[in-house]
Length: 92
Image (cartoon, rainbow, N blue to C red; front, side, top):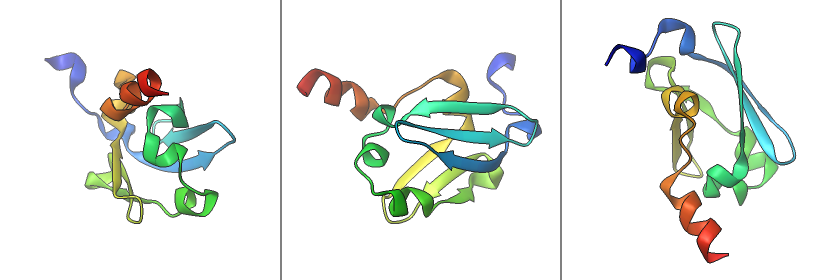
């Protein structure tokens, strides 16, 4: 499927954290903003835990060691929340 191929410009450049959302800057100049509610581990993390991230997956992912969380630019671009996010919405 050609539309789902990852491209060099989709690598992570930086991550910024707001009150209810975080934003991922890509090398190609785009910025993707997503709600913490999509990723329960980030939703419940402290600001210090959120800030402790590193680029992984050849530049196409973000890893939070303490939170044991890995997210990909491919998932962000598809608009794919964590499967656990749906559970949280229905449970509470």
